[in-house]
Length: 239
Image (cartoon, rainbow, N blue to C red; front, side, top):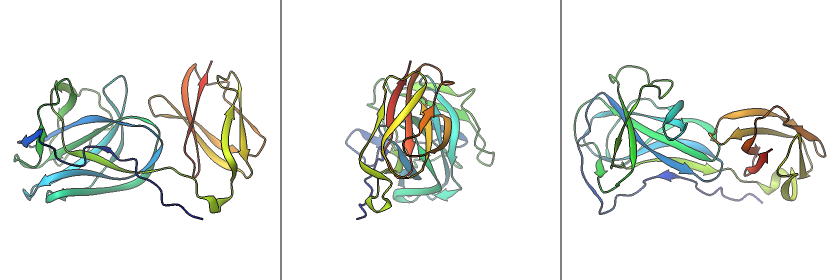
């Protein structure tokens, strides 16, 4: 049996009454933060366009303390059409956490509407000539308040396909909190794994065999997520 993976999209996929005509300035990389609740695969970065015919590039950064941190995905150049404009990226796995979705336009125009009722919502920007590479980090970005944008990420939730026969019943983890070694219950075949910290950064990867322990002695104290092939992630606390 193969189940259709559910969507874990984050961001703003539809315009509401709060949105009104905007005017995006050329050569500024700018965007807002959205929260991913569970692990998933990023398929594309998207915006809702006003058919201006202008060129756009988009990018995604992970988060560090409420600000853009490391660039994790960027797109090629596409033209702003009407409605949803999808910019594909190489598929990557995203851990639960906050992500910044940003766009830079080649010409100044009303490429998208803007929600100016998003009181308290922080967004970040940086001057960026359209032909220049997307910055590798958010260092030097500036913040502004009280706006949101019709940008969103197309994300497929990471789910188990029963036909893979790698888990029996429900996958569980113990002990939790843990000091040195994680035990995985329900695994009946070797599985690749990734461990992410609360900022969504990969801190450990490997292959675990059934009934084998995972050594996490070198991790710092805090909350982590372990993600397996074709499985939703599990969280644990390193004490």
